[in-house]
Length: 144
Image 1 (cartoon, rainbow, N blue to C red):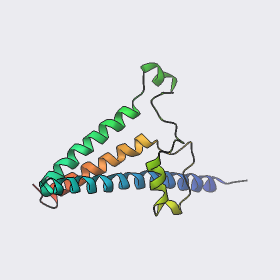
Image 2 (image 1 turned 30 degrees about the horizontal axis):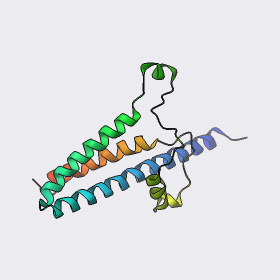
Image 3 (image 1 turned 45 degrees about the vertical axis):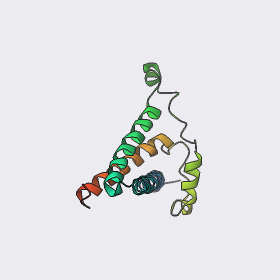
Image 4 (image 1 turned 90 degrees about the horizontal axis):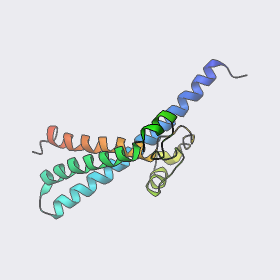
C-alpha cells in the first residue's frame, strides 16, 4: 500500500513534468517569435529597434489570441464548470508535437492528459516570454 510520501512524490513528479512541458512550449514560442521579429526587422532595414517594437506587438497579439481561446463562451459555461471554448487538455497541435520532439521534452514522459495545460494556456505563457524579451532588449541591452 502506498504511503503518503509516495503519493506526494508521485504528485510532485507529475507537477514538474506538466510545468516543464508548459515552459518548454513557451520557450520555443518565444525563440521562434524573437527570431522571426528580428529577421523581419533586419530585412526591412529597421534593425534592433524595429525588432524590439515588433516583439512588443507580437507579444500582445499572442496574449490577446491566447486570452480569447481561453475565454468561456457564456456565463452558464462557467457556472457548470465546462466551457466549449476551452480546448480539451489532451489536445495536441502540430506545433506542440514539434516542441515535444525537441530536447529536453522528448526525454521526458508526456504529462498526464487530465493535468496538462491547454495549448492556449501554453501560448499565453509564451506571450509573456516574448514580452519579457522585448523588455530585456530595452532595459538590459540598451536597444532604445
